[in-house]
Length: 115
Image 1 (cartoon, rainbow, N blue to C red):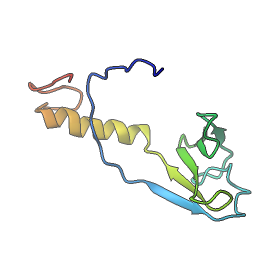
Image 2: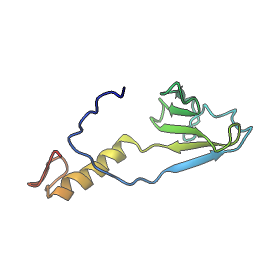
Image 3: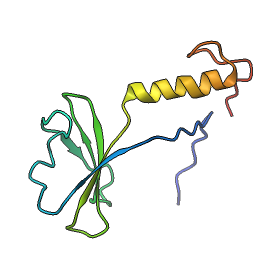
Image 4: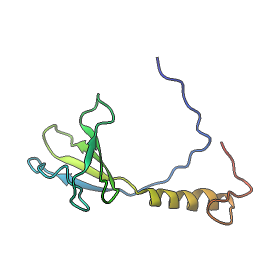
């Protein structure tokens, strides 16, 4: 049985560009280090049924990464840097509020809708 669906008041689709690093087989000794600042990251396995998908977070530079196995187990790893909070908030302000006729970010325009 599926859990009940949660209705979301609004959905905003924002295309993003991802920086993805491809790490070849046998180059995993520094996998736990942040690609940006080099410090150790915390590795999380959000879904215990998918051990080939990890979330890595760096407490020093506050970057987040999605780590995925490539197409062949034991082969390359894909490390995708996730957008920073500031970048997400900026895009929402630009696309949602101004796109709806608001004069400034944070103030919805007259056509603001929650659906």
